Image 1 (spheres, rainbow, N blue to C red):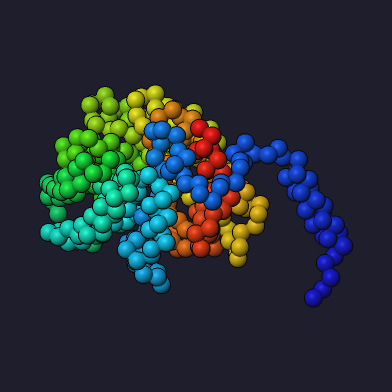
Image 2: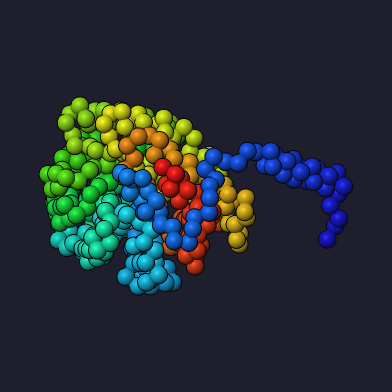
Length: 368
Ligand code: XIL
């Protein structure tokens, strides 16, 4: 192997030193806190009014994985869900392709089991999701339906699914990811494309008819810190509220990645929605990073800080009803499947031991 040319070596050393010096000079992050005691549980540490949730693994990318269906089969995982969380979100089991696989057939077994488990363990359930551009069954996307038929199909689906769990599912993500990053309505959303923007309001009305007590959400990613997408939601929410449409909350998914930036300015952004009388929630938190083997301590520290910022941003907004983690432990996370070479995105290692992110989340909850 040729020796590293001297000037390059010096440069590399200098920048390594600069990096070290820079991170050594940084003050301790405000979110870094104590190590959680072994008997700590997120759900017990949470302040009143905030539910701490997890996605319940199953369906979606898990179908092709080399492990058995997680929720029914993995007992230590079930214990983690029951002990750490006060809210559960079926990760895929209430999406169209899973729950409504044929036009005249619903498949409720998996969602029923999650709702029953939640009731047994004193947990709320978030329903996800009713109107989305993704994970729709072929019979729907490839069927040749008239606009009137499509409208009836959506109405029937919402009445059936929301109605089945009336009084048992506390919050629904009625509309998911309807805007793109520029704040324009997504062109690939079948419902909006065919039936126009007004279908969003109708979906909320139909869900409300099916369960008047459920809090109904809009939900999206990449808008924690504000920007065109968040502004588009703010404008839409104002319109919906003015028309008396029963929108009750906005969900900020919280899929963070080291390649983008930390969720700065989150509380101010979310407070704009709270000021309109809405609830806000972090609905799908994870923090992914480039991985090649085990993450470094620096990566784990940054992950802990970013999880902490997400949680504090929601809590500081004033009316944050839930903070949900999207997958735990790492081996069940969607991240490595959807973002090649990235992973380690949850606060738990594969053996269910806790990462620094767990301590940070627990510390923030415990201090409130
Ligand atoms: C993901 C699931 O985690 C995967 O199992 C599935 O294969 C694809 O969808 N935004 C959402 C979630 O609203 O429903 C997505 O969940 C992740 C991005």
